[in-house]
Image (cartoon, rainbow, N blue to C red; front, side, top):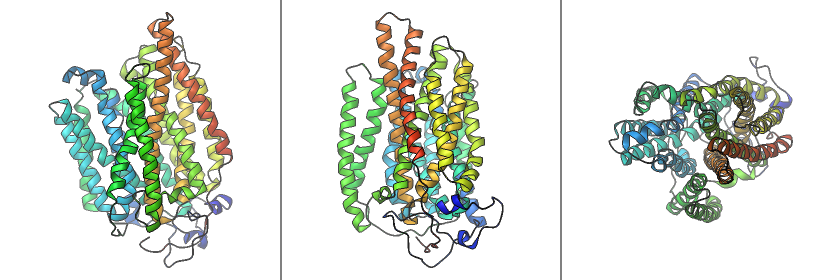
Length: 518
């Protein structure tokens, strides 16, 4: 992609012959050497069947990711209807995140062994079945089961989308296509609470699932009729020990982090920390086993992706960005409702402009990436995110709602400049056979970093709020002080991303065509 950045082609103009036959990966091999030439070529445009597949996957991914955050506003009516406590109700979200964290690391293996069409039908079939089960759930346990099934389908969809896009999109047009993926990954979670608030204003909580079901079934039917196979699966044995260890590794980390904030200052924090310790220990064993298995090309998650310097830096920046995004998504509604006294729908509408900005900006950012490369976008993007987080750190019990709105819009603009360059550069630095594993790593980092961001922000908020309350502060003032402290810590972390963006380098592009079936 460095060639593209240094010698940009007109967006709508003809590409030079070298670009028209560029490798789908576009970048250096994981070991840093250029790949040898191979038979086959990559045209400058996607074929109609490839374009149809990308559009269908984008739409389906938006639907399943949107569902990830719609339940956050629905907990109060859910608690009243099923007669459960707040701690129990949180499992609607926790179970979803846990399932995602457990399944996503396995998708690198799955996408290499199963065809595009089969993975899509499995993903949307599971999501639709889970949605129906959740809508009909007579008791809370059945609702949790439905959410787990939903999350399994969601976990398959995002790596499938990214892998497919990288496989079929010419390098010179990859930025604008990955910009559409940024819409899915960043906008859908931001719009979830707003949509949920609007639905809950007129329907009970089950309406969230009944509205989602026909959309999911429509995507499933269209995929069954029109989605082509774009990959050639290869047979291989799955390492069951790696599967088992990954459950404890990633499940333990996400569970521990998600519970850490809720248990801050309580004796039950021991369970959260114990889960994190188990997760870290299992992760160490998992990594060691993958390093041994990848020598025979049989790893569940191939870690040779990290031998590409661009991939390593991009994943690190992505982790910081996801911490900021998910931490903010959690705290802003709390601040709007518990401090400013806004209704759930008003709180959702307050963050809607930022979500829409990310959606509108993402395609333009993608086109800009195709022209200038990643660094001219990443530097102002990280600066905007840091500035917005410092602005949020000034919030108090007397702040006006417009301050929150402005800060969230600025942060959303910064994130829009960050996500597309990171996704494109990270996967573009890998050889095509590592796309599925790279997609799985990115998805896993998103889940773990998102959980870590929530844990960090909520833990700092809770500890500071308790300290202020013990010192005699009123509830609203104590909550505002806790949120101020959380954003202050977040601002420091967000600032650390700026020098990393300044040092970021685009992956080196080659003109080697791709081998069919790889």
